[in-house]
Image (cartoon, rainbow, N blue to C red; front, top):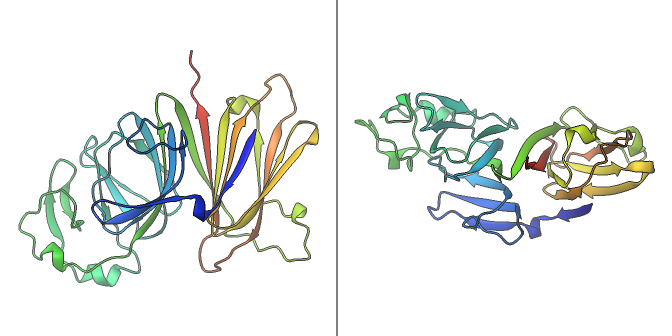
Length: 286
């Protein structure tokens, strides 16, 4: 079993070629791969300045969730007349090969701006409806009442994404919330304040699985309890990531191993406090 903590300085940052956003690559496998390679899986964040078409990844599965800012509504060409409204910290899974477009959804910070903007009539293979449209969206405008360059800017979207190769990997994204948990005082015993227990039941995991924990506005400890009560423990600050690789399980040993997660502190009191948990499993070859 291999543990690694990645800090902000370990992430790779890139600006989109269209200049409408930027992404932060938290981790990619194999290490050193790029998006042009046949990578196995990738964990990333993004800041979306202007909603619009997504890049396609044929042969991959994607999970996307909104961290903060403006919410998005997605449209898949393969599912015409169906829209998916993404909500905060609610993972949405979809086929990476889908041709996908997006528009911003109104939120309380943008309501006044959007109330002043007329709707644009839209018709294409994605949707057939009246809606507010991204300036760099490929969809066709029919007699817009206002030029897109004159639309007021809306709040950026901050998202979290997992992409994995369908032929090799199964992945699952879960969000652990600490919003209703108080910070631990200096004189409190953190062993009495365990927030979440992940039971590593061998029947629910595959050997050589990887667990990834990304801390969002939370300071936590993550402790592994192995067979014969062996222990490993790590502390995560906000925006840090713990990667646990090469997990192995003995299906004939009734003793389950487990992971204990303890929330210590919420650095920004006014924002949600979460831990994003990603389970990466190799697909078994029959």
